[in-house]
Length: 192
Image 1 (cartoon, rainbow, N blue to C red):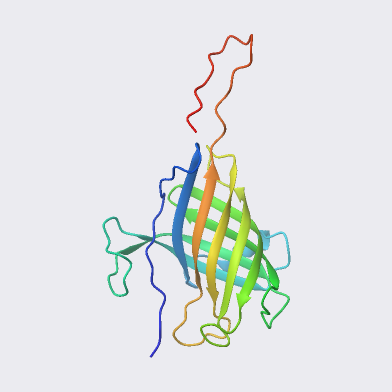
Image 2: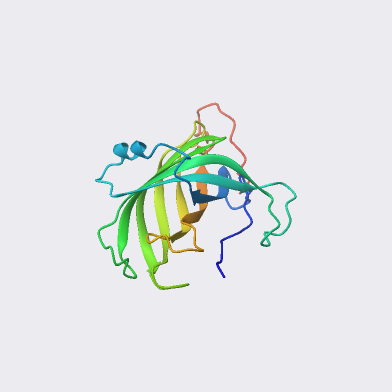
């Protein structure tokens, strides 16, 4: 019996963590027709793996993320570009990673490393990995941020397992201007 990944997804999840912070959460699933993989030519390293993907978010009011409940809609596309040097995907090995997300809010681009967590769970040949990327491009109104993932990579195309990720993007707005004594500006209220 094959097992497919399914989950609860949210785009634009509100957060009270920090003032001026916005959090986006969504799922990507490899999709060779989602975007042209030649876009990897802009990655700042030699790419040997290209992963075009569709972006999915949870429909408002969709039930609990249980398998079979549906409730997802396609909300964008992504292109991941990697330089993998350890084809055994040994635990703790890393890969250079560049990703571009095209979302309704705009383009987000990240650059950094992914670390292999396992190459044998849930079965040998399925690679679990985690990425931590600095956002190098983001829509106007933000000053930066980062992207993290919980990912499954199926390089052998084993049946029952999709290549895809759960992504969290945390982006930050500029700090409000704080007046200095004698500037004539009114002090801003710190709401943190």
